[in-house]
Image (tube, rainbow, N blue to C red; front, side, top):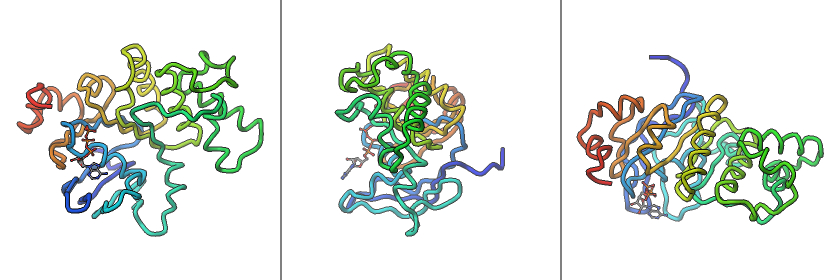
Length: 254
Ligand SMILES: Nc1ncnc2c1ncn2[C@@H]1O[C@H](COP(=O)(O)OP(=O)(O)OP(=O)(O)O)[C@@H](O)[C@H]1O
């Protein structure tokens, strides 16, 4: 086993929505530049857990976290952590593509504008780099000033990935990023995830077992708020240790 500092870690993590105990004593360590898939039946806590890593649950009334979530060994729930700084390091892509009603260009550079960056060359270079990395550049390079809303769903999702990449995060959280897309767009997103792991640490929530098998290095199986099993994806899919994992991956419940 490598002794490398994990990129992301949860230690004795419990989370509650009011009285409801949504995540139960979770311990996990994820290495950098790997893809980890979170799988499990609806309501098992995958999205809640994913959102902890960039503090997306902070504003939910009654939500409470105990234990530690670490990025590069630092607890991101410490009082002195600035959430805006954290989110520059930990980007997020949602289930439904959510481009802003702006041009393609302005969507990509949105995060830089927020940071007050006005230099045209910097904005243009970042837009091109991010769109190339999101495998969208060739399709949109002549239409950067057109509305993002005119793109197809699959293109919109790659635009949202480009928008996340533009602020140079080291981690990208993806919550069912392809579930609203057709098979061809889904395949493009999966190829893209495969490329992106050269430079980023990726965590993806998916309901699609084949997708988890195709894109991820590691898989975490959640059941009723517990992390039941975490292992290399190949091992998990060929020889799961827990009966609940076995039942889930063979489609006995879901
Ligand atoms: N804002 C909220 N307030 C109260 N309970 C919530 C809230 N969000 C989620 N929950 C509950 O927490 C549990 C875990 O939800 P979560 O969305 O994390 O599950 P999930 O595994 O991602 O499910 P799905 O696959 O259906 O998206 C569920 O029982 C859900 O009803």
